[in-house]
Length: 380
Ligand SMILES: Cc1ncc(COP(=O)(O)O)c(C=O)c1O
Image 1: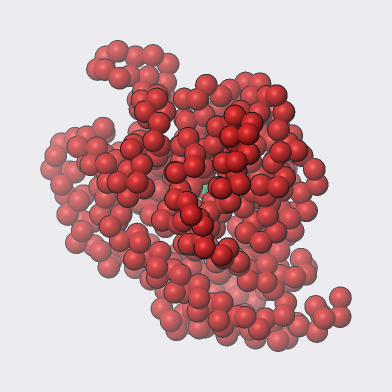
Image 2: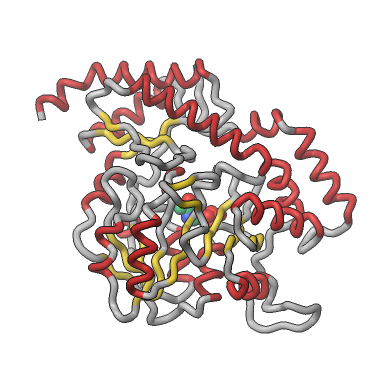
C-alpha cells in the first residue's frame, strides 16, 4: 500500500462541482483582481472567524508583516516569537524591519511557552507573535495577560489552525490581528498562494487594504505600498471550500483519535498532546521519537513501506545555516524544547480524505518499528 501525505486531488474530486462553478463564475465575471469574488470571500471569512474584517492578501507571510507595518512596527522594534515554527514567521518580522526575538516552546504543545516571554521583554518590545502550531492554539489567555501588562500588540500566526479553539477563547478574540495562509497544504487551501489578515481593528483593516494595493484607497491615487492581493480565482476556490472546513477538521480529528488509539502503547515515540478544553484541528499529527537518533530511521521505515511522512520542522530557525542573515535577532535563554522537537519530530499523513485502511496501515508500520526498537529506548 502507498499512503500519501496530502489529499489535494481527492479533495478536489469530492467537491469538484462546487469549485468548478466558482471558477466559472469568476472567469465569466471579467474581473479577476480586486473583483466581486474577493469581496464575497472576505465577507465569508470574517463571518466564519467571527471578526469584523478580513483582507485577502497574497500569502500567509504577507499576512504577518502587513499588520506589523499597519501598527507602525519597524526598525528598532522587537517582536517576540519562537524558533519552533515555519521560517516565514520570523521572516515576516524581518521583512517589517523589526528584530525577531526567540523564546522556547512549550514541551507539550510545541507552541510558544508563555512562561518564557516576560524574560525577553525590553523597552523596545512592541509585539508578541504566537503561532498556533500543528492545528492547536497557543495559550492566548496567558499571552493576552502579558501583552496587557506590558502594553504590547499581539499578531496571531494562524497559518495552520483555521477552526481551532482554545479553552474559553476563539482565534482573533484576544489579539490585534490574525494572519492566515491558504497554500494548498493548509486546512483551507487554494491551488496556489493566498493569505488573509483577519481583525476587529478598523485601522489595521484600512491600512492593510491600502498597503496590499500599491498604497491606494482610490483609483489612481497612490502612496507607498506593495502588490499583495488575493486573486479572485483563489478567492473563488476558497469560497467553495470554506463551508466544508469544519467538517474536514472534524474528519482530521477522527483520524487523529484513530492514530492515538493505535499508537498509544508505543515505547519509542511520544504522541501529540491536545490541551484540556482546546479544540485541536490537526493540521499535522506530529510524533516525536524519544531518541533523536531514531528519527531518521523511523522516517526511512515509513518511506520503505510506501508511507510519505515528513518533518515539521527538522531545522529550527536559529539552526539554519547563515542565521540571521544580517537581520536583527535575539535568542533569549536556552531553547532545548525547540531543538528537541526539531531533532525528533515526524509528521504522519494527515488529511481529511485519508481512509481507515490507510491510517491503520500507518499505525501497523509504526508499531512494527516500535516493537523492533523498544529495547533501545529502555536500555538508554
Ligand atoms: C506557521 C506558518 N507561518 C507562516 C506561513 C507562511 O504562509 P505562506 O506560505 O502562505 O506565506 C506558514 C505556511 O507555510 C506557516 O506554516
